[in-house]
Length: 485
Ligand code: ADP
Image (cartoon, rainbow, N blue to C red; front, side):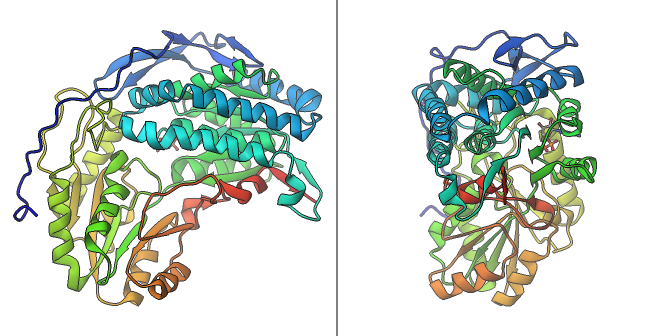
């Protein structure tokens, strides 16, 4: 191992992924009732590559009238075709979407990296394969719902309004659309304003798959477009992933209505290293949990708790590892940490770096150069933080880690649970008994043991407390889209 905090000068030749094979239009309209239609307002906005601030395409801004058109199309498709179709036939369409997406996986991965700033390794190896797997997995359930819910009468809900964020644009679209279709619902989906392009490519695939018109409608736009979906009277179910602040607005808006909801909101997840943990693996897990994907993960392991006896060792190893991270062009296959999704998000992260220092915490940043253009942030860690520090309590959504130490397991359980959130947690230890003790006491929807950020279509995902309610993925993910009698 290199000496303490020594900068390691690994020089890698650039290995950029080619963009020659992708097909992006200059302008995207709305995908409503199986057709590409101009927005009622005539307005378009730019989708920017956050790695270099270059415009990728212009995207339609849907207003209330467009959303109404999309909901009407979804209702008609529900009443006349989709809810009447044999489940085994519905499954064929979902399989076809999965296969078409798999065939164009490379194009999806490149567009995702260009539009979201996430590293190509992640888009290629994680986001796109997982998105395909979600469609495959839920296609399998479409004609087996009576086995999913034995002795119950299962019926669909109707029109699902789905609003997704920018951190996993294609994957979130798959998480939302696949179970909704498998259970016989129709969909109006809105991607986030900074990352609409892979959802629009998905619309192209849906068109190619021959899915009946109106079963899936994609409307692009900002918060006002999302609000129009939430407030539309003829939507039966809202599925939202995004900030806790917007989640609260949505909950208020649908209170007292017939609409069902699942909300997957923010997080401030704890990653806990006990003194008997394999430290090198744990450090790699910490890095994976908060620095890879720029910390743009709602379940990012943003609070590290280390048992006191190994704290110095872990912090030293962590700093050493941080210095070897390559921050830069998301399209380069060597890059570990890509671009921050937007200027707004970079401003939020930078404001928290200032808050942390003003609160008296000690800040350490990876010793790396950043590209001149584009939105980037150095992997950062804060020591000397208090449980009450804002950087410990509030979601930052960037590559920023806080470190606290603890002496006893009871103490760390209390500290880890002392947050308004409860999305995920990680535990690193050699002993199964300690894992079971912690996993039963941590108030988090997912607890990983000796790993972090592992996803699978068969596993449910979702939160406690202000991290939201309802589960996506697995059997639980089906339940969110059905009525059971
Ligand atoms: P993030 O912090 O992840 O950007 P947001 O909650 O701001 O989270 O955004 C998540 C999604 O919610 C985006 O698609 C955004 O356009 C949408 N959105 C923002 N405001 C509202 C609102 N008031 N009602 C419905 N959707 C909204």
